[in-house]
Length: 316
Image 1 (tube, rainbow, N blue to C red):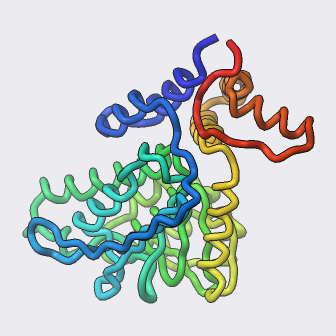
Image 2: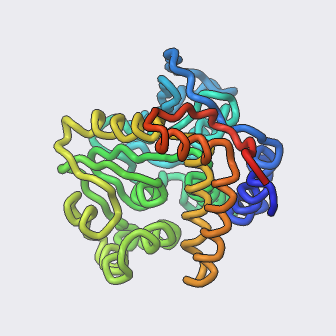
């Protein structure tokens, strides 16, 4: 039997495009998942880039939960190239550092994200720049899925185009009952082709096509009914509910969660028989981990498990 870490890394590398080589290297060199640091780590950054531009995000991290807040409400939290670069940096920062257990992507202002900054997509910026924007956006959306850390969207307001794509790409999405979701690119002559990749994997085909072809938004309740979001709560309760879910995730073994997320995403791309073969192998390897045996022993002996958050083996 292959070592559990080898199986895990193989699954992750199979899902991660070769072009994201830095993150692939991170996965190859990583031996142990971050442990929970129960002391409070809190920092909020309003840094300036080399071009002296103000940061487009606010970052807080407490007890292993990092919140990335899109913080450019004047531009409706548009996913400009600069915003995509900042969010990508924060998604990968210290992913192996020992604290990170869950990531929340929230927003400031009445719009979650209006998608791409259309001013960046004019003839004046040129084809090469347009390609760079869409490449960076696609890489970030795939990274959300490929990260070994669960990513939760905390949605208030309107999420359109690439903003809707971001919600669809997250592992879990908690939405305010006033939130709305749309892929309105067709109304400005730019079909939402890349948002459709994530949207079409989250909702039924006919719902996706209706959104793509009519540009009409759907309500939070419809988004819940069709699988675009996980939960809908009153607007004033969105942050509390999202944090509740993130804290619940932090109660469990980080390494087992990573293993499970990787397996789930991998098997979804397989035919049924291959998916069962793959998932069975992962479960057998999960059982060979110290974490797997600790959880079972704790259950049998009626005690709380003590997680180490690593990939050490209990047996071959």
